[in-house]
Length: 75
Image 1 (cartoon, rainbow, N blue to C red):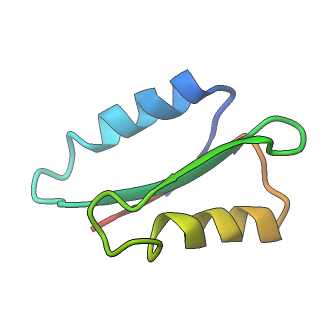
Image 2: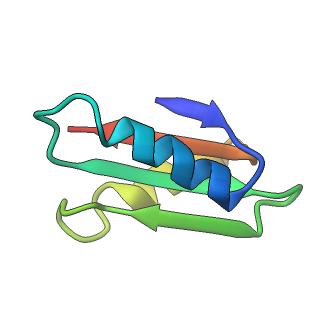
């Protein structure tokens, strides 16, 4: 899932909603980039093996020069 965001608070709000459904999901790995050049960013593997989920999502956003976007993989 990917969605457009304007702030860190908005990213956190989307993640909070996503974590409520589906109920059997164990991991919500994500990355986001905010700002004209994507200077504000964060990744999380959320329990997946280190650097196997969040950083690749961030890499996909960077390779396409996408900013103001949150990408989440729910497993």
